[in-house]
Image (cartoon, rainbow, N blue to C red):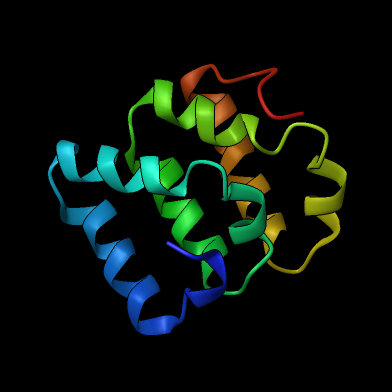
Length: 103
């Protein structure tokens, strides 16, 4: 998947898969996102996909996705789109013990 091609219809479908798909489907979709989390987080529709992924995938995959933001948290916190991803990351840290990941 090219992160540049993530337009509203595709982003909406991917989000629905994270919400309603099987764990196998969620894992497969999140694997596709790997390596693109920062790029997607900085985009209007991509940040929503990353947020859904972080909410619905298993903890080990959440950690892999969040680690892609290592060293970029300040940049993301200041960005209009990716600050929402950082908020989800902080919520996960509180509820799922991901503290120290993606600083």
